[in-house]
Length: 432
Image (cartoon, rainbow, N blue to C red):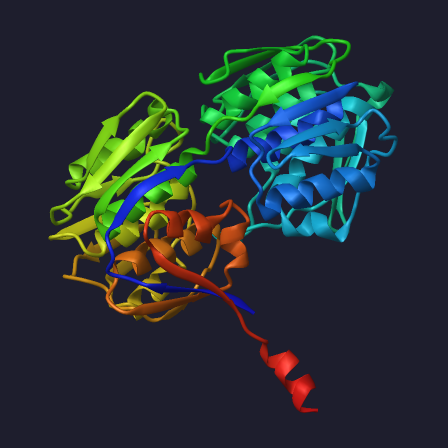
């Protein structure tokens, strides 16, 4: 069992570099299936979700070569099977992007239902299926697999209105439509930065995607995509997490390799809480040297405050002066981490999608666990500002989305270590 041990109460100072965006990488990597040639992709984050996706592509027959730490050459030309039913598929939510990519290339796909973080109940793919069906595919979910077939072997363009703003459905339908016959129009589309990044990647390979970043995306189907070069955007949520860490622990940190406009929804809220944030072009300077002020936060689709930053901002508001209200506007239930923060002395009451946080002077270190990716990051944020020692277990969740998490925090003065201990089963074996 691996855990993080954090001795809190130390302000953070220095510089930190942000990696490529997880949410962009896990869409772009499946998109290479559509490309008839080598894709050299730069700024790929070294995280477990990416490693798993690359291994899935290898099992399908892709040729993947490491150029350097964060650059890969991916050639999916030799892939012949449209079936991805490996057990590892169930460990990562982004594996469902293989449906759109395989369906778009082969006219059929059989893909194991995805896994990933479990909050808000089962994450439905009804909007994905609605879009595939509109494009002429027959879709059946059976025995834990999504089976799709386009009669005639190719999808056709269609007009699709998403009933809810869904990042996953928007990405999957963009992938499916890139090589379809005719024009596909996605209305009520998600606008997140990684949607735009996927569109830019596809266009750099020869696709014709227009309107990404707005509520209406039009994809003009092309006959083929060719190889090329692409660099993934910086990770908005990783940057926001380290901004929250500075807000919680205090200090001053220069966060490099960011796109400040992507961070605006986070920056505005932190400034309201009394944190100083300065735009420096491709970096932001974050400083907190006074008490945190209370604030109300409602998560919304981009450009609203991101749901993936909700646990981290909640951790900071636990030590705010006054009472804050968090409203989760995306998922039905994303508050499993609240019980963990309560172990550290947080005062939080949850009613449905609303959490009321009564600020305390400080949190106290305690044994806690990561309930999911962003909840795990929130435990680290809380621990950095807390008095005493916090031990965080289930850190595999954190490593799904943060490259070199421990090393980066150490680089700005955090007292954090990664400790591996035998689990109970191993101990029983050794005793036996």
